Image (cartoon, rainbow, N blue to C red; front, side, top):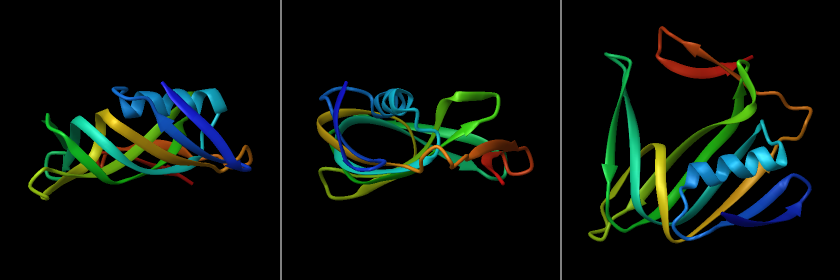
Amino acid sequence: MYKYKEVSEGTYVLSLDNHVEICQALGEFCKEKEIYAGAVNGLGAICEATFRFLDPATKQYVDKTFSEQMEITNLTGNISQKPEDPFTPYLHIHITASRRDYSCVGGHLLSARVNGACELVVQDYQENAVLERYFDSGIGLNLYKF
């Protein structure tokens, strides 16, 4: 699903296998390394992606799938956890992808399939950092609980 190298304490460079789903592979890596607080960024190429957009008026997500070859021009996000499921990393990832005509699409990443390569850098904030989430019903989002 992926190969990785720890380049400094708590910093990993990942190369995802071709055709894997990005969030699934990243989630599995975080479980393997027990990363529950951290950050991720990356780039690569995908052939299908589903983005989410939160409509603040309805507090409902609108999903849209794009089935075409695209370049990931930016993937960025954070890793935290929900108190009700403390051993499952909670991934909050945003992505921008360029299309063949050089226009871009993006948003909150629900899923994306690698088609070519995907390279990620994961920063583990280490075991002393606890980043929990809670659902804010007024906004309709899972926010940091400080």
